[in-house]
Length: 410
Image 1 (cartoon, rainbow, N blue to C red):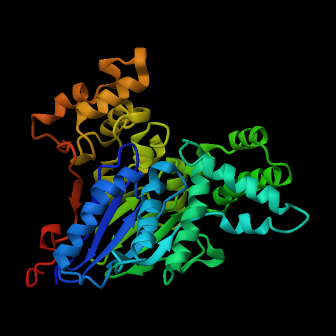
Image 2 (image 1 turned 180 degrees about the vertical axis):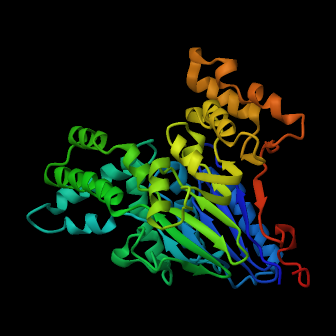
Image 3 (image 1 turned 90 degrees about the horizontal axis):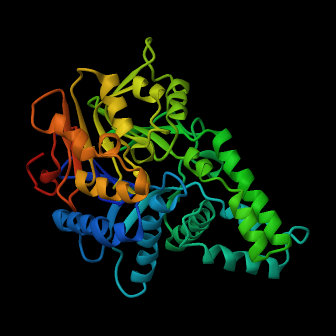
């Protein structure tokens, strides 16, 4: 039977929300990597899940099977939509059958560290209550602390649903490179986890531990804010779960979260996946950190040679950056590559211009201006900007997304 091996990047503003389609059209397997914002779940993600239920004729009494749901790291633009999805599932099951049926859930969170502070020598009940209240108050803030707090809430919510294998099959309840079988089977495909490594995850745990101990002993708004500033957003990014998906027919996709390019390359080397000349060819690379220049290092772009590049971002925080795209095209020279975006160029430009304010320069920052050289020819670089509100769908396997649920087309 012809196999599905496709990825759909849903419009998630400046976040990530990726649906992966595996298996056959008659018996597809689904994996969800990140969920963007609450609005992402309420809009495109929920619509897609409803569409899949309809295509497959899922009974009203059953949930749509999701073989794997992964939160790459605890950052608001990756985790908030997943948290809302799980919370809504809990609320909905009080009076109706399940909407989704999650089999395995990957999330590195620190609810165990929160529980550890119940010992008398570290905190009393009043301190823990104040800590919990303060963490909840930060949920709307764009901070590493708020995202970590969301991660704890999400881990608890997954436990409430029950029957979900959390961080299976990894040891010590954390998804890390080198702590599970080299390749984890998912239908006819396999997943290799390349990151984070113990060092990156330990750095995030250390900052979180220091914050908890300080607040549990003497919680106050002033102390909380001081401790929150010590938790670096870059550490949460560097703790991203990085995965290489490989189809049994040879196609591959590399999903990177917000990881730093050099760390991704290190993970590939550690897994023995680079050739003698230090490169790896993949069919699709999800460019880390929404196409930022800082994360998409020269080392990454020279090492990972992709046929398709996917960038999830709408110009907020200046990503994707024109300078990164110029660098990518220069490195790949005359190679045929397709670059897929999740928003039209004019939307990206408008948000980038707002972010840069008076520093905006068309010749330096505008994707609309940069794209003119590529949009009207059949050269080796092809740019794929969607119509506003549409997804970027990259189909790498012989079976196509449109065939899902159509019996006999496999």
